[in-house]
Image 1 (cartoon, rainbow, N blue to C red):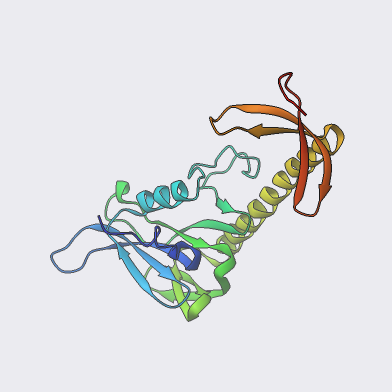
Image 2: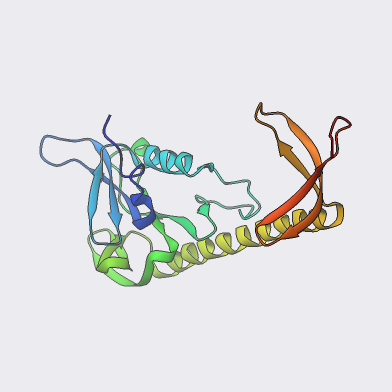
Length: 212
């Protein structure tokens, strides 16, 4: 199997995921992957499938309706936070031929350089992305602004949540100075911090068989 753009690490350059249809005799339901160097990659999977694969690769869930950063009572898809600096904002980017084919794409919030009103066919706005890419969108100006703001708030709330968690862990370690030493066989042994110098820490095993 060929290595995908995700496995190659190109997700770090992602601008957006755009649902598209094949051309000519190809009527497939695919995804265009836009990168911030201007490159566009055709991924022959549905956008939702690509989203799941990307989230799985990064070790997170693609369903985040019930996270600490998701707003209750939302009538539309929630932003998807993939990391401390990366959020995917769901936007209506096409009118699907049938209901189950989907018209939602995802733009990386931090790659949006601006947006403006735009009238062509069914489109109402367009976004200016990194790499001078221009993305037409079906949403109007007010709705688009709200969606992008929601993405930024979700990212900020995610940062706050993990900062709180890190602070609690740090406080507990400072108070107890307790650690676990993983032995070659995979078992763990309690240990207490004796001294610390730069990147070096000295631990004392707490099990009764320890010669220390």
